[in-house]
Length: 253
Image (cartoon, rainbow, N blue to C red; front, side, top):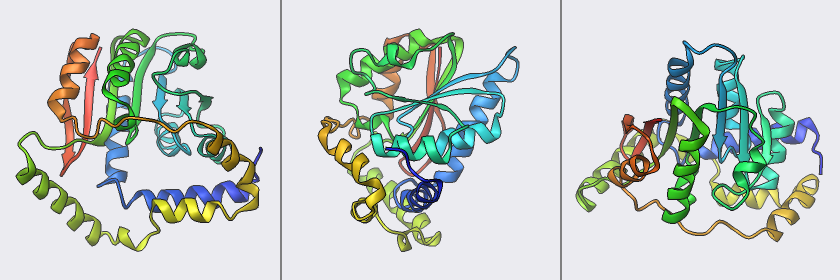
């Protein structure tokens, strides 16, 4: 199922463009996540040990690797096509693991040789149902060293109901329009086009054989995530960046 570099580069670049439609301030959010990891690992001896949850085609892992070239990054995802794009296009950024986050055996599949300094994620954990999210937070609390951090960039609805939710969504749309991101192809168009590339056929067939992720925590507000994190064993948790309904939440072990 190996891909040529030219094919991987093409589809990763198209992925980067289409994702701008959905993540408000995507590049700024990546930068904030890297800022947090750099700050919290600055006084650590040895190579920072970082886990990227739901890595997709390696977007965050690649940025972290450029920012922290000495870091040992382990990146996990369940999508065989996106993982192969990452392994080909961002081969040196991370060690990539094929596993379903939160499912039995996923922690063992990571094959970690020491505690983590940081776990990061962006626009991925909201796909987990509440029970799986709770278990995942508990697993991460055991994998992180004392003082280690979980840094999660994701979409979280406002606490106060549809009024503020509508304003947050409006702000996001305005920013997206100013950046002209709606000129890019959307999620459906990307996957439809990928299906026409013969080099991706085997990976798409494998993707189709796997069960899709179920459940969605997109309805959980910030307070619910903070509560689950505290229950999982994190000493502190809260947002460090926000634009509209796009957040970066940091939890300290």
